[in-house]
Length: 353
Image (cartoon, helix red, strand yellow):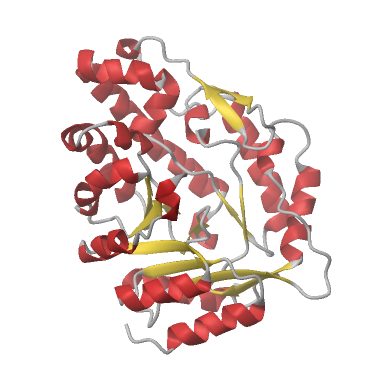
């Protein structure tokens, strides 16, 4: 299989296959650069198209991709998601535009009584119909040229937070634990239905799937998370979040977990006990945390048998690769030229893993 913007797509797919099997001789390296001789095009934000005709945006997506080179192990892709809680809109939540006009939609809490929860995938909902329509139009423009990445399936306690609101959910965990468990079971069942629907919508069987980080699998991949975990104890995380996450991951062929913020680190050992978890994407957050050297955390993750995805400069990535000494590493480097990407690859290939 070929893609117009990555003619060696089949060879890149085989490297990803080897990576997930632990057989690739080096870490994966994702890089992009402007294509010489073509006027650059700004990345089109689908978060600004909550309604109206998406075809002009789809045309800009193709223009953007045509003006770029996707280098080393990078596959050309576009990420379709209207907001961070897109998953919950498929359960019936409404979404309103964010005030800044750029960061997409905000969901509107609509679960007033958790004990009467009837949470399920609602194919008839406004936002699933809108999402499916946009995905189909993008695929009409993109198939044979590049891939379209599905929205992130933000389920478990994060979805319940979107339905109930964080303050209400905190009270529910104390006052109505059985109702929380029932609601989480419903969300987890809906996750299976939505993943199946996305697999059909994006033709995972033929094309494979790709995440918002550019991580590819020939099967099903996504980025589970539980940002609510930063507000609960390890015991509560193991009781409420971990069973849901384990079930979510069992449905996937490759898994990158989004670990967000220093207060989530206390759950690392519990997470790494999930066999299907492959890679952890660490997001330190803003402020002082963003400026810290998190190499000891990456070493801890590797010692627990999991891989790491790193975003940043090639120099820092190469230092991390030497320090960790693992092939279970994905570097999304920020360099902006083919020469810089090739230099990084050459340095990576000289290392021993």
